Length: 290
Image (cartoon, rainbow, N blue to C red):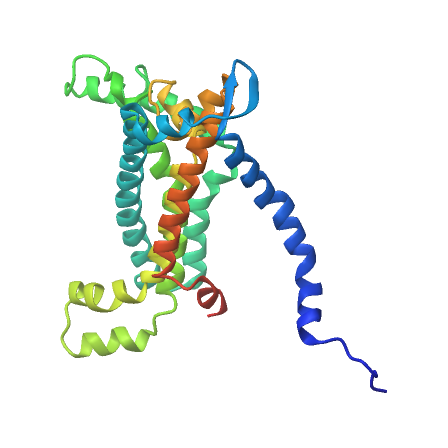
């Protein structure tokens, strides 16, 4: 039996998307809009006044200290991305093209992933016995006569922050690259080998172009994690390293909500711009369907 007045498909689509649109609006758009509005308000200790004040934005856009904080954050992003991309590619290449058995490949991936079953604070504290002044690394260096005293920069420094980031973010890069490499037909590699291509030529001309989506998705993980993180910086630097995100946390703890809101908006715009650029190299929907 056919309905006399069927519901138009456009109305049906709007009804289907309405619950998610409502959740997205109330949980994401409204809070972001509130943060944007607060960034233009005046404030003093623990209070925000409904008066227009551009000082927070002037500080974000003109302060040399703020620019230095963002520059340090970008430096962390660049270094962590370079190291994780190199490590991720080498490990993924070994797993995809040198480990022939799927069971062994999954076991090796599980071995890499097992440490991440523990909580973040435990993983951060676990670096102290290794990199601390009385840690294993310093003891080994002094035992071998390489240094006469403990190296203080191994722990609670920028080096320690970078080590923690690399430890945390290499796994997502590996997974993304292995996923892309697993979709390369073996016949393509075999044809290149039959044509006399060296291993480096195969990597440069075949593998790297074909795994570009995996590299882009892994890079998104790295960029968003480093740009938005304050926990690792605080724990691994002992409060001695400051970044743009740490500045936001410090201002929130001091009840300086408008400047924290302004820095948050700038950080969000930067992250969205970087992700938008990276998505030009990776069609996530297509990757999930393959």
